[in-house]
Length: 245
Image 1 (cartoon, rainbow, N blue to C red):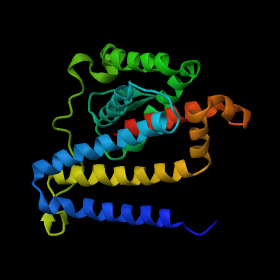
Image 2: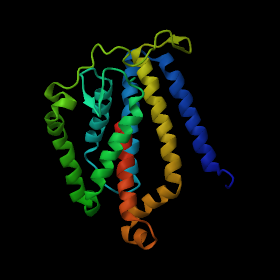
Image 3: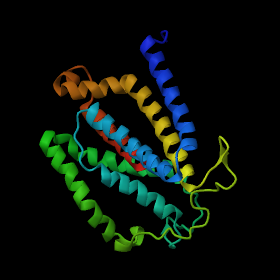
C-alpha cells in the first residue's frame, strides 16, 4: 500500500473533528434539540445510501422511503409481542431493539437486490417511475399483510420492556443521558461508522466500477465491468443503508 496522500490525511482529520463535535454537542443543547439532531443523523444514513446509488452509480431512485419502511417494520416485528410465529419461533419481546439493526439492513438490502434485478432494463425516467411506484404501493402492501405489520393500526410497541435499551445511570461529559440523548448518540455513531464504510468502499474497486457505470455503461462493459452485478449491488447497498435508517 502506498503512503497516505495529503487529501486522505485532510479527510481523516476532518472526520475526527466531526466525531469530536458530535460527541460534545449534546452538552450545549437541550434534549429537544438533541432529538432533532438525532433525526438529522438518521436521514444522513439514508442519504449516504442514496448517494451511492444515484451519485456514484447514476441510477435514479424515488422509492427509498419504502426500504426505510421495510427496515422499520423488520425491527418492529422482531421486538414486538404480538405472538408472531416464523419457522417455529414465536417472537415475544425476546430480541433487543439494537440487535435488530443489522437484521433490518440485511432484509432491506435483499429487497433492494431483488428490485434491482428487473430494474436492470430500465434507465432514466423509466427507472424513476418504477421506483416511485414502489413508494406509492408500499403502504398498501404493508397493510395487506396484517399478520406481520398489524395492518392499518400498525405494530403496538408501547409498553415493550427494555425498549431502547438500558440508559439509566449513563453519563457523557457529566450529563446524564435521557432517551433523546441516547437516540442522538446511537444515530450519529451509526451514521459516522457507515459514512466511513462508504468512503472506504467507494475508494476501492467497487467504487471505481460504480463510477464507470455512471459515466458510460458501454465503456464500462467493454472494460470488463459487469453491469448487472454492480447495478444490483448498488441497489442492495443503498437499500441496506435505508433499512438501517
